[in-house]
Amino acid sequence: MIPDFTDLRKFTSGFLLSTLKNPTYGELRAHMKILLPCVHDQIPLQASLCLRHFIDFYYLATAKEHDYKSLKQMRISIEQYNKLSPIFEDYSNSRMKFPKNHCLLKYINDIESRGVVSSYTINHSELQHKRDAKKPSKRANYHKAGFVTQVSKFINCRDLLHDEYPEPIRSITTVGDHLQSMKSSMFELLSPLYNAAFTRFDQFVASNDERFSELYELVRYFLHRVSDWSTARVNSISNLLEPDSQSAQFYQALALNEYSSENELNRAILRSTSDFRGTEKRHYALFKEGHYGQVLSFFIVMYKGQKYNLCYCQRYDPAFDEHATGLEVVYTTENWEYEGRFVAPVSEIVRSAHIVPDFAHPTYSAISKYHYDQYLVNYDVSQYHWFEGRDKGILKRLDDSNLVTWSTESENAAVDENEELDAVVQSESHSEDIDVQILPWYLEESIFL
Image (cartoon, rainbow, N blue to C red; front, side):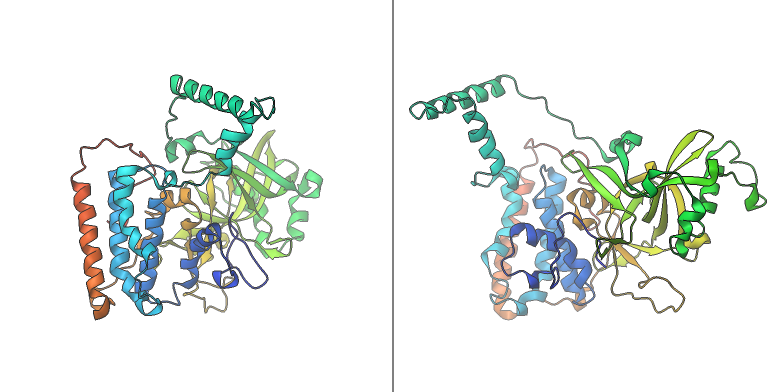
């Protein structure tokens, strides 16, 4: 029921941390992305909200650039985390008194005074090893007597050239600019069916389930909308336009180029097959109109010699409801015409989306084809998606009268940490005149402000 994403690893006994004896940092981070949607209905509201603020703090703390707005939002997230964390006191052997939890308070001041946390490590990464050892060694003659001297001279000359002729600073492009620049060359249809030959729609529909029974009719509606007859009134389905030869080229996957938060181009694969190598697959996409869709098929149709790259999807619309996870709530539109299924150009897809069931809302309708009444758009799976989608969800609020607070034994420690956090806030207020690099686009106002 959990759609795949890049860092998700599955094992025969499951994929949560309980199945990993010695999890690595990457595995811990990957499981953090799906933990909240999986457990929010099994834990108290205060615990769910606490995890939400911790994840927000993590993404802000590990960002590549900061401004005063991001530091302010980090402070808000850590304040809320400290306020809500007493819910875990009885489950912690140290009663939440361990060094790593205490060190979270220092991130804001350290980032402001020393830069981003990715610059703190003293480990020599493989990338740095290639730059400082492997590449320079290729410029030496490998004679033992002068090898170190030759490599050192090369590195010294290279660094001097970099200092004298620095690379121009790349401007960070906004999400809107990325979307406007996306053209047909930004995607590629993969895994053709029927040897990429044009196949009649009735043959394709006959080999699939009932969800595809209206596919040809929806294609005709699409051609009517994009044609010169789009303003003409349709009295019957027989008056709709038809594609050439009533056939299409069908594909099982779409390669979609996406931009990361570092302005790097990543390749995402959307699969329309419900079964891939023995595993159920459900891939979703965000469309430019703001709704989501589960992809069911990709195909190419020809009309009057013009080629149209299309996709056939099941629609999901935002519900604008509060939720304990702070994620955007969406619902299926099976009560709509054609049960919410639609045909759209592939160019209308903005990016892939990770949609998971809201396990707290199973459906009890006997006629519904879905197991859940609502779903969650899990933008925690990607840092880029998180910065873009974190303002779409509405976080549920907890009344102070229902708040679990620290025990008497821990009150003194909590007071000390609050005093330290106040000191960090005061240090921020005295640094308004410091010139720092501004992150212009992907740190927007938080929904928790």
